[in-house]
Length: 132
Length: 395
Image 1: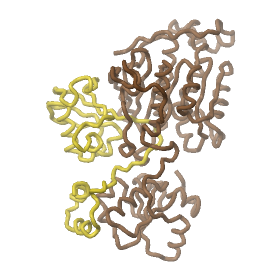
Image 2: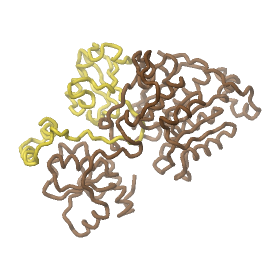
Image 3: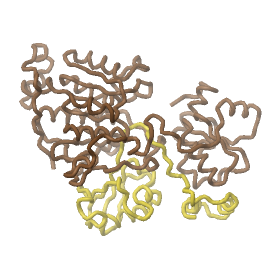
C-alpha cells in the first residue's frame, strides 16, 4: 500500500526539508518506521528510546486520530494520507533546543573520539556520535 | 463532524437597542439576516477576553472591536518592540516601547468609540486566570507558549467557557474551538506538552507576518459565530493551514473520555504550576541548562586586537549569517555533530550565535566531545552589537 505522509513544518528540518513523502506500508506504525528509516533524525522526535510512539505526537490517517482507531496497528490502504500533527505554541522562540546533546553514555574520551573521527568515513560521523 | 453553534445565554443587563449612529456603523451587519438587529445586539452585549495582543491578537482586536463586541478585555504584560511591527498590525512605529495593552487600547478605541476596552497589563498566571476569565463569555487564546496554552485551557474548562484557539509556526497555523459542552479540550488533543528539548529552536522559529493575520482572523470569525449562535463551529475539528502550499485541511478532534480535565472523571480540579508541567521554570528566559566557560564581547575584541589566535565558530543558520556575521566559520548547531571534524581541537575556539544560547549548547556539546579550549561568546551577536560594534545589526 502506498501512503502519503505529510510532514509538519517543525519536523521538516529533520526530513530533508520535505513537506511530504510516500512510503509503502500496511499499517500506520510501519509507515512511520519506514519514514524514520529514510530520515534517521526524525526517529527521536517520533519514537521513544524503546520504540514507542511519543505521547505528544498526534498521528492521523486521513482525518481520524489513530488513538481512536487501532493506534499504530491501524491498517492503511492505497492513497491514504497520514498526518503528523505536532503541538505548536506560537511564533516566538520559547524553548531551548538541545536535540544534539550527546547523552552521557555517548561521551567518549577525547583520544578515542579523535581516533574515531580520523578513521570514520564522513557519513559515519553522525552515526558514531549517537551509537557508540 | 461540525458542531452547530448554540446561541449563548444573554447577559443580565443587556442592551436592548442600538443608537442611530451604531445602526449606521453596523449597517453591513444589520442588512444580513444571519446577523440583523438581534445578532448585532448579541455582539454588543458580548464580553470577549483576548489573551495576548501580539500577532494573533492584532487581527482579533481589530475585527472584534470593529464588529462591535461590547466589552473587550486585553491581557498582555509585554511592551511593543520593533520586531513586533512586521506582524502585529495594531501597533505603529510610534508605539515602540509602550505597553502593548495601552497601545492596543488606543488603536481599538479610535476604531470604535462605542465599545468598552479593559486592559490587564499582567502576565496570566494560575493565581489570576479564574478571576480574569469569570466576567467574560468567550476566551480567545492568542498566546505563544505551551504553559499559557494549558493554563488557558484548564481555566476555561473549570469555568465552562469556550476557548477559541489559534497557534502558528512559520508558515503553518492551527485553529479550533475548545471547551464547548461535549466538545474536546486542548488536553484531549495534546495530553502533555513536548519536553523542552524536542521542540524547534529559535533557528527554526520565526513566522511570516501575514500568517497570524489569517489565523487570528479565523479565530475572530469563530468568536463572532459563537456569540451569534450561527453556523458550524470548529469545535471538534482542527483546522490546519499551510500558507506555503496554500492548503486548508481539517482533522477530527474527539473528546477523550479519560481526559483528566474534561473527561468523565476529572482529576485536575484546580489550576497547577504550568511551567513545571511543561518542564520550564520561567517564561522569558528559561534558565540555561548548560554552564559553559564564557568570554565577554569586550574581552574577545581586545584579544582579537592583540592578535591572539582565536577560531570564531558561528553556530547560527546560513540565512542568519547573511544578516550579519563576525567573519566566523559557519557550522549550524544542527550540523555540528557531523561536521565536528572541521574543527581543530588544538586551537582556541570561541563559539557564538545570536544571543548566546545555541552557542552554549555547542560549547557544551564540544566539551563533552573532548574539546578543551573552547569559550562561549556571552550574549552573542546582540551583546557584540551593544558592547563592541553597533554597526553590526541586531535582529
